Length: 128
View (cartoon, rainbow, N blue to C red):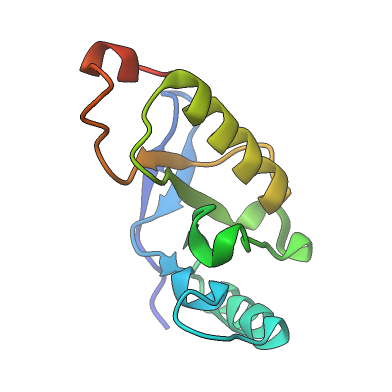
């Protein structure tokens, strides 16, 4: 099987290699119907073994049912997002801290806003 191409992400000099192709974890969260956690974890293990180490998740999936596989360790990169329409700094900070805690990691490679908040001026959206 061919390796998944990577790109350097993060702060210049970090040399973090992130796969260009990732796994959308929404179906594993129960958003589309009931899921069996053991089967979801098995799928994540197969994805990891196949070289898929970028997993996209969010606190909205499964009403906070984000999870990771601790034994895979630092191999996995996460992307996550601010859900809902609130774009203020306090909501963003709370959302990021919640994702870090639920995923059991100290870093999320890509964090982005899913929907634009029309009530928060663009100047206030320069969070980090």
